[in-house]
Length: 162
Image 1 (cartoon, rainbow, N blue to C red):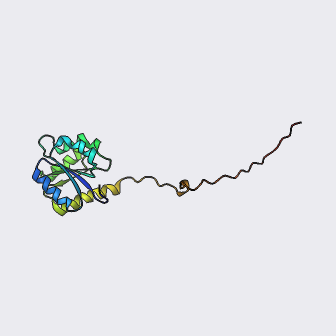
Image 2 (image 1 turned 90 degrees about the horizontal axis):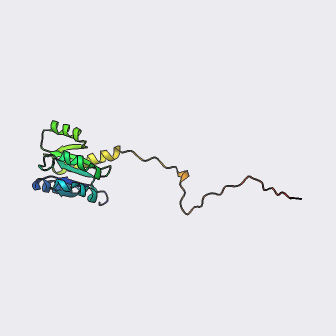
Image 3 (image 1 turned 90 degrees about the vertical axis):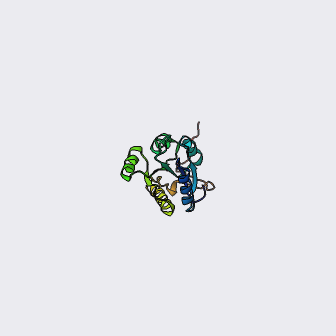
């Protein structure tokens, strides 16, 4: 992935939608990988390592919410799964909760608005992830600096035998 670019995997059975989404968000700095096949998503997750997966809900062979249930284990811990559908938003919200998706975007959202929503969801995820514990400067020494030698306070005693 290029520095600063987000990578999106878009899964939709409609080639026109794939083309529209790819052109829309790549114009705004996304690297985009698309697929019409629900069955290859796990392999694409492993090889492409996308930041965001945009899943069509209405794929005839395997719906987006079911794809999510099968493939989440192949994604990185920070990968977002977003359901993308033209269904009623209340049903879409319910499907997000039931499937464990990270959010949804209605299919009417395209162009700069889609790119803005996707990058906003990603930035929100990254801001909310746990931060690793801070490392104390005192405990880390550069490799070329020798560790300080301790000074012994023990006196050497010679014992003479008779």
